[in-house]
Length: 158
Image 1 (cartoon, rainbow, N blue to C red):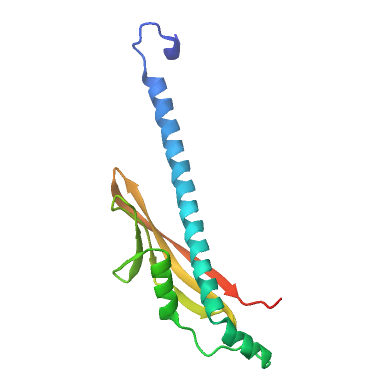
Image 2: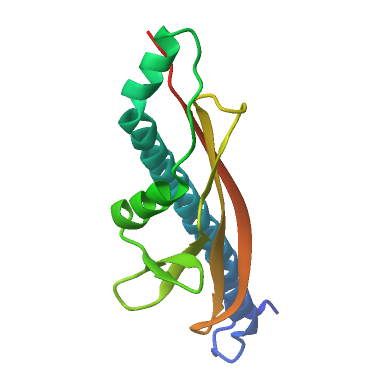
C-alpha cells in the first residue's frame, strides 16, 4: 500500500517529509542568493567610492604624470572611510560600519576599509575590508561569517 495514495487520509508522513526537505533546500538556495547579492552590491559600491576618490585627486595625479611620474604623496584613508560611510548610508559603532534594514535588523557589517597602493606610491589603489554577514535561525543571529573583500581602482589615460 502506497502512503501517498491512501484514501483514508491516515498516512501523511511521506508528503510532510518531502515538503520539509524541499523547504530546507529552497531556504539554503535563497540564503546563498541573498548573500551573494549583498557581497556584490557592497563590492560595487565601495569600488564606486574608490573611483570617486581617484577622480577627486585626478588633477594632481595627471600633473604628476605629465611631469614624468605617477607618484602621489599619500592616501587620505579617513576621507575614503567618511565617503563610504556617507554615500552608502551606513551606521558606525564598535569600530565597524553597519547597514541596518528598515525593521532594525543588521543586514551586514564591515570593518573600516583600509586603502593601500597596489604598487608603492602610484595611482593604483586597493581598498580592503572584511564583510560580516549574520546567519539567522528562528529570528536570532547564531553565527557571523566573514568574507574578505578587496576592490581596486586606477587612473588610466586615454
